[in-house]
Image 1 (cartoon, rainbow, N blue to C red):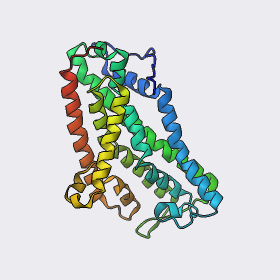
Image 2: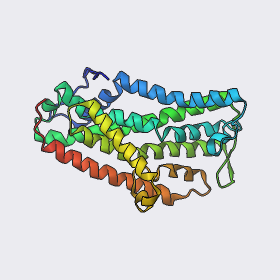
Image 3: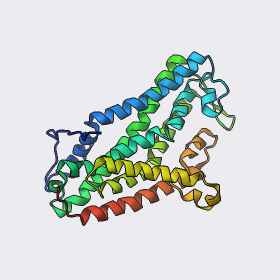
Length: 286
């Protein structure tokens, strides 16, 4: 995969004396100004379309269980089902691509050295990179949310929502809960984004950073599939990712949701600190 060059336009990289907001705006433009980012978002937007069309063509949800089995009866569930089906692979893959390139891409283009020449600029640069990654995580989940809602309304009947606890709520209440689910999924990806940011600080080869980040994700998945080490499962990165479904209960079950967010915060904190230590002590040659 060739490294893309995105020209920094007038919002460009500020000097150390300029306002920090300009630096954050520059990073957001750098992430969302790449064609690669929009291709990833387009792929994510296509997930609800493929699911919806497949169910519509088949005439029903078949023998599917869970959210997927309810899509034909209420298009609202296409939003939740699409997020659930994207979480094990599509969303993490998109995050590994963007996070793996965050610092390694700058190093490969020879721009990182200039960006961190001033010692005070390194911490701000890393913070701006992390904010851009968090923004991408939210944009990715909201792309699926919006696409799922549009496709669900177009292809299926939409009405009141029967929650997992058996309670029926209005469509507006259901959509608000689905919006909360999208936010929770985005927050669940921050731990992986932190790992990608750290790996990206170790190399000047974006492809290597992407591959290493994705491999770490695979390792977590393998560890989670081994029953003999179940004692460590609750501490693995993806263990609580499916806790978002607890928002579709009345009342919501907050225990696992909060626990998942704390785990993500711990992973993010550890790897962000490691990336900061690496970047602030790094002798950049490119």
